[in-house]
Image (cartoon, rainbow, N blue to C red; front, side, top):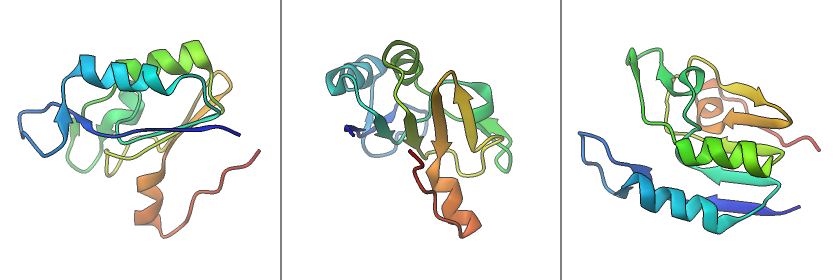
Length: 114
């Protein structure tokens, strides 16, 4: 089983630490290559995964992560960033996308099932 990790966040008007531009983030995702589990801070750019129901706004999602899902088809993509997501789990083909940060608020750990 191969794990890949991508750090950093995408630029926002809030200018928080460790924000990088979309191109640099995409290069980091590409550099990871084919993995079984992709771990990153930013979710794939899908409305269900980037909408925060408490803040009532869309957060940044990554087009590069979404493209990696379609091209490399990892078994899991694990991420955080959105504190109260509209959906905390979403399947894209064979890839299960999971906001693991949300499970901290629920007091329930997420377990990989193979």
